[in-house]
Length: 319
Image (tube, rainbow, N blue to C red):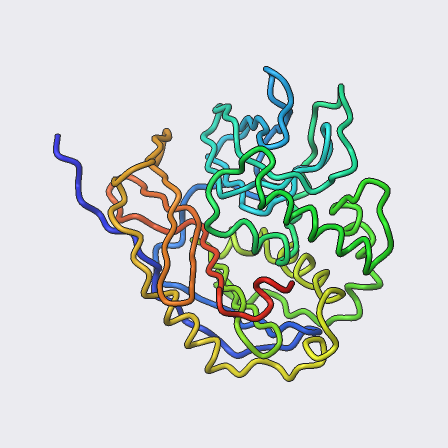
């Protein structure tokens, strides 16, 4: 049977009015599309995470989906506990009943606790300063430069917010408690909202969009909390910069919206009970986009999740 040649692209994006939240400017994003994918995520996903049965490795963990729906695990999502805290290297879709090994990076350089196997999931996300090093980099390698850079960026929180005995990123998120959150006014998700453009220092840094409003709401607060933690790393000028103009957010969305990820069935397609999926990666101008595309029966491919980074932002390397 001939495989259909279906293209994957960014859905049509609509950007709303911005709201300042500390050093961030948040612009709601809506997309065209059906809006129903049958995917669970965040705390609604019944995912069990453990060290590899063959022996623990820094760059991999084992995930099993015990839920009734395919489960989406996001790049930058923290997998806490085990022999050390990790973060997911890229988007992963795990079918119901499926067990698979996933790529990870360590976010706790000072602990390797033998005998600790089970990880807990709170659906927390790594800050933008950490996630920026995940973008478009491919699988982790032992002793890789990216792992060293991630450890170095976690250590910056040690310097800015007080040391952690194990240089633990989750510990810094724990410290970012209710007092910190209440010092920022963060808008609630709007009806049907599926994404957000994050502006920092008056320029767009990240556009993150989901295939449904529910998927977006499940991750919105964790995304913003993690992004606000980065505020302590910003220079004073960036912390006090004027809010980003809306035209820059719309221009950034237009660049991201022009990305073509090629044919859905080109390579790396995984088969699930109710859908097909594959990771996508594309570049257009200064924007690099990475995420997960899915195809349900008798439907065109949809983007389940996408992170679009502005590689020309002065803080892409400095954060």
